[in-house]
Length: 330
Image (cartoon, rainbow, N blue to C red):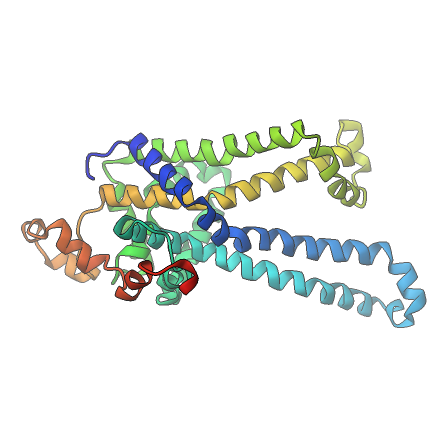
């Protein structure tokens, strides 16, 4: 696979995604829609609460106390917060589980056993949390304008950290970043092109296309009414002279919701492409960072692709067995 071009990787990933889209949509349903539903519960219930606070305080005198008012507002937000946090966690897990699914598909021709692929994270939970913590700090730095360029460059070098986490053992959380850097080094331009293709396709073209469909069916204005009602509760009177109205905010929020859903459901496509890109670039490595330093380059060359696959990226035999079964058997 070492000579595969960027476009070949993209179209191969798109093919795998489209052939198994029903399974990927099912897998991503709760991680994506659960976050949306959780936020709707949080803001919807509190919107209802603030709209009816006067009537409720008359009916229930205990609500006349400020601490009780605040406490009840927090209390009714907890169910939605729990749903959101569970969905968000599942979304983070998908970053690695989807890589394992892709490898499973390449070995068996099937996408199967979501729980088994999730175990790639649960078997290394501490490293997974540390990886996201470090990546979160990096993302916070990237928000600062003075770091935009340098963080943008390093983002490309670190783009394969989740593939490294999934397929290579014996590395520290920092080691995942270092290993990704080593893989991308010398392939920066091609990696940037693949990233740009995926970014444009999943972050702009698909959301814009779906928005056009909603506009054509005259659904945008109708579905934006709920967001518009929420916008009326915001203190935006001072912004209205600048053309910012509740209707505009409502439509903008709806557009952002559509974009979030599309981007979420196309995470499998991006993970598939980056796993294929990892396969295309990664060299065989030893199981630990120390052994990497001790092994000579000549010894590495003796490792065949097949031997590396068995040693480094072996799929659990139980998963292979389940691949031969019908979906409803597990």
